[in-house]
Length: 157
Image (cartoon, rainbow, N blue to C red):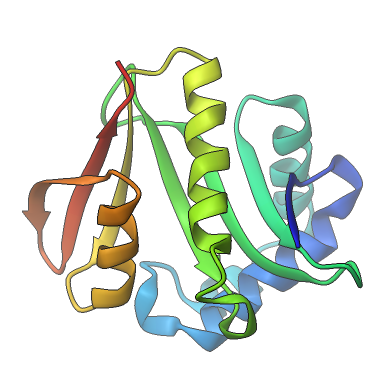
């Protein structure tokens, strides 16, 4: 398996992996399957284009059969200027506990570091103990609690 970024022509595959993540683990995200499934094709096309152009980056886990088994979006954090934020982090059940989640996180952190962001932020559901443990092992530290989420940060500088 390897990590790579989404390319402009892969909007439909991006939509498929995102909808699979929401169907498989609906409680892990703030979004819903129904909400994202109703997004028009041009919304997904914009996301795929932005990933290739580099203003934000969506990374995917790809296996030897070219199946997508996970994803994570990293972009500038609108709530914390100078920081990046990871959204939509997900690894398919068949790819878990193989280091691929950590590899996705590191790809996001590397992207942020190359662009001189000070830190990388993310949110995780308080109830998602396995994800919280994975983020802590990857160097993300508790910042604050909000509603049903913990906000975590990994400082880069």
